[in-house]
Amino acid sequence: MARKADGAGKVRAELEGVTLAMVDIEEAAPFIRQRIEQAIRRSGLGPLLEPALDDLQRICTSTASAKAQVNAAISKLMEK
Image 1: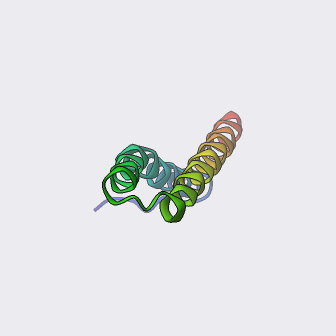
Image 2: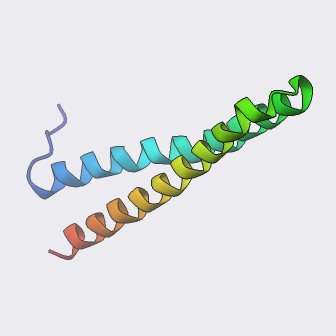
């Protein structure tokens, strides 16, 4: 039976789980951007959908920042 992580190992595992979730966002974002851009071109709904592209960029920027912070926390945790 596998041992349950505790202390720093548990925190590291949780942080790595968060990192994986952010990687998923980073991988999906280009496809979402492409779909929105296609919808703008095909439907003429630019005024409605262009703010969604701005929101997506903000999400991507925030995700990258959070991912960097989590990675820094993991590094600090491993130094101890």
